[in-house]
Each structure stands twice: as C-alpha cells, then as structure tokens.
Length: 365
Image (tube, rainbow, N blue to C red; front, side, top):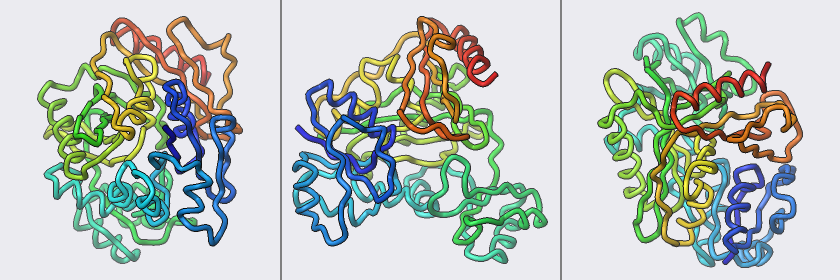
C-alpha cells in the first residue's frame, strides 16, 4: 500500500513514521520552495512542474492507493485531480469548507452546531457596522489563510479598527462576537470509508500568543452531557460530509453550552498526546481510516498531555523525565515556530498538570 501526502511538514512526517511501521509506503507532493526536511528519507518528494498532468504527477508519486493532505492550504482543484486514479481522503469538500471561515461557520450552523455570532465584511466601513451590530468586543479574522493567531484583531471599540494594518489587513473578513468561555477544548475523531467512527477523549488546550502551547486529557471540569454534545457534533459532521480520515474540532465550553470555533480536516496539534497514551495515535488512526482498515479503540486510563516547543531547542538530558517522550521535527529553529513537542503521561490528572507545569518552566525558563 502507498499513501501520497500533500505537504512535507511535521504532520506528514509523523503520519509517515506511523504508517511505515505498518508496512505502508509514502510519497510527498511539495509546493515550490516548501521546506521538506521533516520528511527526509521517509519517501520520495515530488515537486510538480508547470504543465504536468494529473496522470504524470500520480506516476511520479508512485501510483498511490490514496492521496491525503496534512493541511488545509492546498489547491482543491489539484487535490481533486487524483480522483480518477485513486481515493482522495479526506474528501475535497471538507478541505474546501475549512479553507474559508465564513463557509465553515455557515456549514456548522446548518448542521445545528452552535458557533459565536458572526458577520462578514469586505471593507473597513462594513467592519465598523458589523462590529456595532454584533456588539463589542469582537474578533476580526481574515476569511482565508491566517493560523496560529495570524490575521486576527481584537476590537474593543471602533477606534481599535486602526490596529488593522499590515499585509493581512485587506478583506474579506469575518467578525465574531467574543465568547466568554470557561475553557478551550478540542476533539479528534476518525471515520473510515465503511462508516466506522472512533472519537478520542476531549483535550483541554492552552494557547500562548494565539499558538497552542499545551493540551491535556482528561478534562475533569467538563460534564458528561457537554462531552456527549461535542462527540455528537463531530460525529454528525463526519457523517454529513461522508468524511474519511481524522477530523478535529476546536470548541469553547461556556455556561450556555458548547460553542464550536473551527474545524481542521487533518491530524491536529492538540491530538499529539495520543502518541503516548492510546493504543493507536491519531496518525496511525488516520492511516487506518483512509486505507479502510479497522479503527483502533480510543479508551484510555490515566492522564496525558503535550507541550509544544515553540522556537526553542531543548537538550533532552536536561528536560526529559521517565514519562516524557520527545518528538523533534528536524526544522530550523525560529521564534514562535513549532519545532517539536514533548508528550507526558501520568496516573492522575493532578499529577499530569503538575508535571506539565514543571516541564513548561524547564523549557521556557
């Protein structure tokens, strides 16, 4: 079996490492200038030339059984071009929906999944009127692109619109009413082609400057009914899209209930802890799902967590403890860049939080 991945970053790397262990071969399609160090020696890396046909690219990739993606930022046309030759999972529609925040919010609401109140805007004048209609504070986001806090502005008043400057300060935008939340959580789930669904335990997430810093499970402060609501939402979304592969959903836990923030049609940073705490990680589960192999169980005991390494190199002997597992991506270290992560397991949530706090102090002291 062979899987071709659109993208050559750390998610493609970890997917391949898991798949290779199961006898799966990999190839990778990169865009011009894309850094492919993360996937060195894990399979052939192909950079298509202008004018190459889908058949030619498919052949260069080694005629894979399925094409998948590690990111939303791919050309849907280029993604769909492989359909005459092999399976394409997750479906192109899911990737297309999540490439635009307005489309995504409309889709979630159509499925009965609550979101923050929102309004689109194409001009600064429309930003002003939309913000006044929603009521301050609001968050303005570019409708497309933008991740890890990029392309976003917090507005407490009309005067704050002057903060919207730089390369990303051009419409269209999506304005969202700020949601007072108790905690941020996410859920990672998988669905195979035969309709089998597996949902991982919900994780709680903490961000730093708009970038995920830590994730941990279980979320002891979430009620059974709230957890069931999250699981029902993501299961319904996968069924509606006839989704195949791993899908993640970020949510806010509020006094009024669960509010969905965004979807990601791929393995997700907040699910990295599954590498150390589950019978099969999210990466192995994705491989199983897109090859239509039986999915692994997702029940766990104890507690687990993850610390992102954001623009910092670490000396393993200085920070690792017996229950720690380091994953280094082989990327050049730059401020704020995700260059690796460390997973932790512990017998109890309390012990996990204590270890995670100490690790964060050790790494970022």
